[in-house]
Length: 101
Image (cartoon, rainbow, N blue to C red):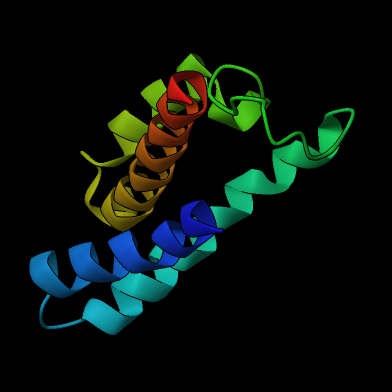
């Protein structure tokens, strides 16, 4: 549950601090990047609490993350890239948490 909450809280903090003038628009874009989790529907089972998303799901692959990094350097896609990278970092952190406990 905390993991899901972080997917809303951390993007809100980043949007508020880094995009002060239009933080709400950016925050909504960040929230829309959570649609990247639709690739979980391709897995069997769809939800596994012990599975690490990074490098397992197609849109969570290292190749996809490379594309997300490129997106931050394109002005029109910068916010999308940042939102996707925040998502990947939170999922990566969740993987480490699962390994530790």
